[in-house]
Image (cartoon, rainbow, N blue to C red; front, side):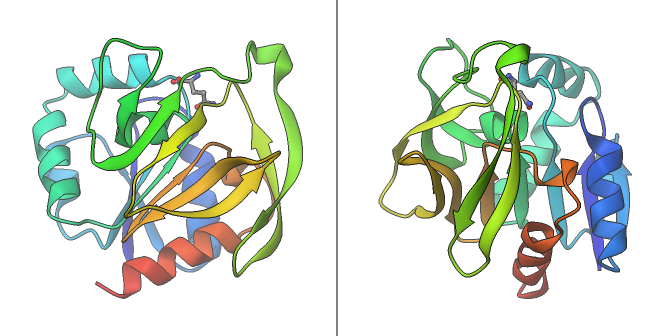
Length: 188
Ligand code: GLN
């Protein structure tokens, strides 16, 4: 199964490694042509504003938007979730706007406020999670399922074959979230 990892900025290598360990063919996506033949896509964490600038320069915004609207299964982690969100409560822009949640950017504060925790995820159990200047999910639309919470705030959501996590599963050795994502890609 061929899975693209958006490779303009952020934790690209770590996602490629996690997916490869699970037997997927993980490829970096840098140009519109790289989207061809993908069964799924990962939008990694990093810095959403920088990612958007680079996406705009590489001509990827519209092809990616089209792929998302057409239902390409996608996992957005942290900044990737910010790119997917329909609303960003403390930022004037919105990016792809395909996932019906409102997020607050940088809700965990500065880089030094980053932390590791254990999150209980529906169907997977306890999953280790790294939060780095993470967004917080402040509103969830009717078609969105909350799969995991931390301190009563959603940290993992699903809307069909779209998954959004406020944390970084790729920075841990635990592969279960990626495995779950691959199961969604396989259904297409
Ligand atoms: N603070 C970043 C943003 O809003 C996200 C941080 C991350 O991806 N670790 O883009």
